[in-house]
Image (tube, rainbow, N blue to C red):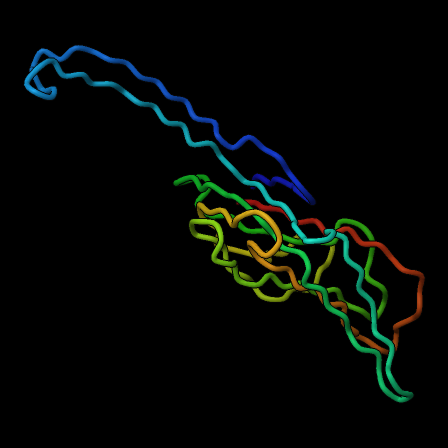
Length: 195
């Protein structure tokens, strides 16, 4: 499985085409007006493309926490963030690259005890072209790759925030009994597009 990792922004030259042509006289008179006709060969090379980027109107760094209760006796509430969008371009190959998935994992750091960090990709917007992928639903992030978008065929999502798939993050209490206050922690979330 070939993997191409991209965490933030990526610039790549996408157009790699080889064109070969030649002309030859045709004595059969198949050209316009009964004169000499010409034939030429044209070779086209379609490059393999698998690129991914995260986009936001502000920053691709976000901050999540628990909101304290408004009154004594109430519990803390979860927080969410939906400011980041994933953009991608993928060109499939007939046999070797029929489709791709986007995977997410925690690359460094760890979620505090008693909590879960979840993310869900929404369905793709109407921007871009081709057979864009579909969401696999909400996942709980761990240090192992998990598919978050699947069935990507030849497609591009468009570039920028509000294009592609919106990533909705939530920090949830999973076990109130073991939650302890700790200094803020920093996590790195890695997204990979792979066949």
